Image (cartoon, rainbow, N blue to C red; front, side):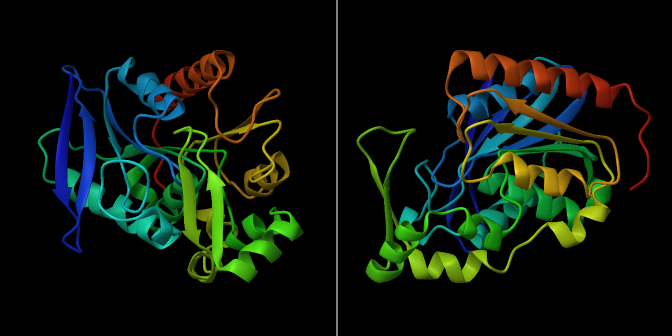
Length: 265
């Protein structure tokens, strides 16, 4: 049964959290959406369903400054506030009766780099890590944007783009503020600490966080790892075929991790 909670973060702002608690809980997973995303997106729900159907309690949440139910405006979105909200949700969860460690973390795009950063800082708390269509470096992400678009955003101070998840909605981001913040982050130097099992999935037509970026991360991971390519898929997965394939990959990976003796990070 789904239960919605509104918690207050360290800055006194509201964060919307969706909890699906298992009656016979075998584990715990936290699912994080990407830039301009929200907790009910079809791919985020698919990640979650993969865990709930295997008797996991699952927490999804809307970060601030996005398109969901938490406080803030999209124009102020950045990696820092995404990461802060992940930590705040985890801190809230610690006081709940269903909390357990180590837990799983799954995230899409900007959510992916956030869970990677968290796992590098707290490797013993994370049993399995699934950064999907993930960003791995602020500098690399900026380098993937077409030059003419960068010039336009630098000139106007805004990155304006249509939302693919909420048709008809235009997303407007303070570009200079975002760039200044995103350049501070890179998971590659700390990837050696990610000794837990890692599942990487990326779409074949993902131009923002392409397969070559995932390979850079994959090659630095020291533990059990998988990298899968979804044929003809974009950055954000929506098609039934794509979601079905992702569900199978997640389910198989979860079962594999659960049947592997836990090693100390």
